[in-house]
Length: 511
Image 1 (cartoon, rainbow, N blue to C red):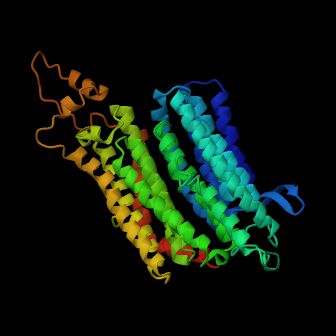
Image 2: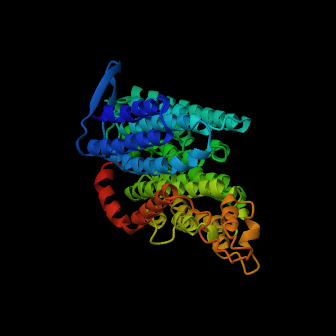
């Protein structure tokens, strides 16, 4: 069942893309493949049994098993991919090579599902690399020189980071007692580790930095601001909301299920990891605050926001892990919604810069409301999901008694929240309240939707007053996924304590 769920979207998505058929029929096939994959994923979460496919070496198998952490990640991956799929039906209609996009979209979906279901570190590493290779064409889609450069940068950063991760994987297997499956608390053999702790700490830290490249953690963060402005908006939403989180999943598996949190707690590796995460949070927020291009601003924001998760993981305590998992869910849906909103701005208005969106709330009120709600979640305004995650992160840092490292995380989180508000909320305010002297008709006279609405005002030679409210609002294929993602962000906040209690059973024995 697990292996079939991985293969089904890959094979069915590619088959629907290469087979000649009318566009309407092809989109119906894509929708059916996506919904059936969702059903298979839910069935696996309920009844999926571990499976060993073949032996890689003696005592090491290519295997899949869906544990509690895998279920948490898969429960976010599937809704995010589904929302993006239906959104892309309209967005990609204006792009070339639509079939190619969806073929790699479904291959990457299978690779991400495989990573969530990986039963050991080697299987996870192979799925991690497959996700990189299958998602690179999404960045490359436009085929321009800039797209090729951005895709190669994404590839080199991801593979380079994965090689650092591979170093940690090999060493952990060498010093592990039984490494054919993940184990809560790790599988290191104390007898073999004795006397080699400094080496293992250095190697594990390299693995954290390497896998952190996919998550945009400094110093291997440079691919995000290069890839996001070039990739189509649906691809950006997946890269930031889901695929970048594979770096987070890999770090969780490396630290909590292989080495063991106990091995890093109180060491230089933990504090260096915390410093990198906090530095990335501040740096990403500052760069986003200064950036003018909307998708690039959101890319820098992702660098900052995903490092919230890394900070929570680096605390190596139950509260930090709970906050990290809540932040994973809240950021996936909130940032996915923001990138999809940015896609609407490009698709309907032809606007790429934040300053060009003044007055856009008159033309697309539903989209701008979704942008505002998702922004409030990223800032951390209650009752949104971003507030619940940041609350757990700050509280777990303060209560852990680590001296200055108990004070710095809440301070960095607070400063980042103010910066996030500074680069997101003014966009929504200016969109809804452009000022009394602002003319929407003049500002967006080059917008086809506005021109169409104005041209319809031909009443027997007598000019009539035309309302432009909602003139550029996209179809339900785009607005409904936006609304669903924003509702999910609200649910993470409203039921944050319930999720935290549920996570309590998951993280028991991990931190």
